[in-house]
Image 1: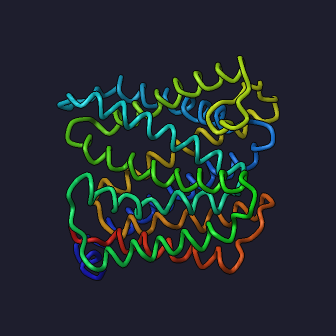
Image 2: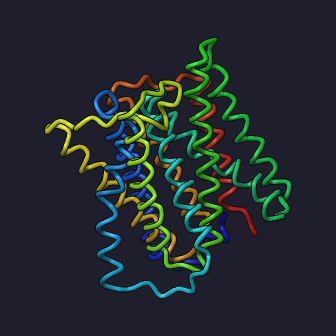
Length: 305
């Protein structure tokens, strides 16, 4: 870890950390808006509104400065958009059912699944410390998941979808690794946002024809938002966009473990926001699980390869 600090001029390090804190706060604020709206607006509508608000800014940026990239990986680009959108479905759904802090913690456990996928899909070999991190993260997930699931199949469904968010987030990050050599970062984000408009339109259209309670995480009926919710919806979309911009800025200096580790501050912000909005403060087991997942993420952030 000391070596990470020695690599950078101090001003750049401080700026990178500041950008990541802003990004983490913005993403936690996005989740807080979803938590506030959960009784009035379904998660699929939130996915739609989030991306409609953001896509205009990305298109404007591309018009002002066209992307200069090789291209040629259109299938992977579409996959990144679709898997990222499905991850967002389960993220907002999780916030509406299991609370803000736990939903974001599940999402932030993605390094566990990303590391395992890298072994089987990319042939990467992990060192002892990385295997230790995976085990620590898995134990953390179990400490949150197992005590939270009772005999109710509905509760099991909610938490399994929360964990599936982490799996799909890991897949999305893995696809970005494959796309970064071929596409401008804005093009990758645009593919995600366009998918985040098209898929919700399909889901909401299906929901207007027939109700599917067992698939409520994917199919819902569109309900027109009330005027008093418009400002919160706008805040949600803008916060998500600001988070994405500053996340990119944070990593524009160097993909360092210091910056990635600071990203786990969004769990702290989410606990604060969630408590303010009426979620129960995590109990001892859940808090232990949260800390273990943070430790796992920090350990993976500082991997050498």
